Length: 133
Image (tube, rainbow, N blue to C red):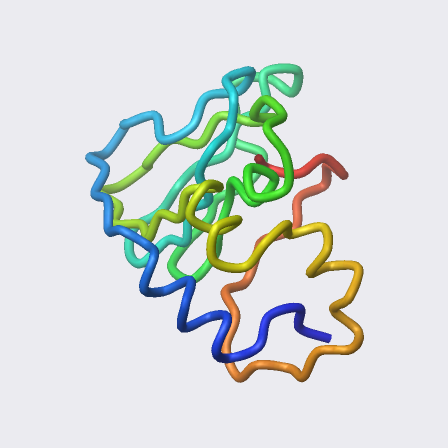
């Protein structure tokens, strides 16, 4: 089931900011500390993992997201995400997420007890079992 209620999604939407990235802009870089989560509004983003070569392991488009691990921890990014077209994203910082909703791990642990919401972004699965964050 969904982890967030509709009211949680509304609160998240209020805390997001809209960021634009030009084609070839690096949005997140593998190995850097993560502190933001991105939902693609328009455009495409290619996902690269250094250990897997120079070809993208995934291509993300509108309503897909990346950087979600930044909401759970301050781990370093596991992939580099580069805008492959002019791209517009909704961005939510970890600080804002925690201030509004608390720790994401707590939400995930209690998610089965929460009612489902009507909308949630989607995420592409890659052949790699690692997150694209």
